[in-house]
Image (cartoon, rainbow, N blue to C red; front, side):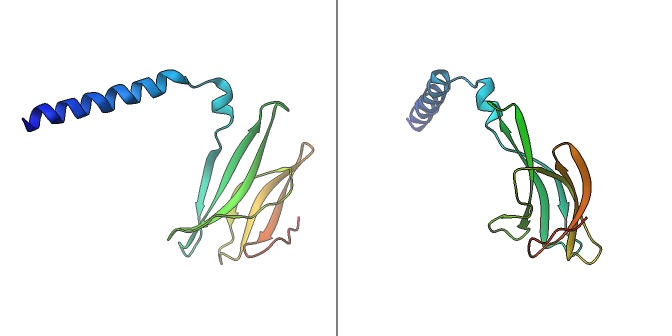
Length: 123
């Protein structure tokens, strides 16, 4: 009796899942709307991770990279870099108080350094 109920439940779950998937197949536009996470860098003390989030503006044919920091113990991520230009390749200073990164402004990429606890970048 229990096996019969179990297999019926499995069949219902399987059929429900395949029907929901069949209603909306993944499109190229869906994939372009997915934010991509890359280049995780753990802080020297192991308490935070800096990473790059890439978003795609499909209509403008442009991608933007932003650096975020999140505590390794969990919690809300905090955006480190500002503006609409791309920032990538975050690297922690040995003392963990600053992050160096590549900032791309209008196709001109340069190394910038910013304090972890605010927004005061310098070349």
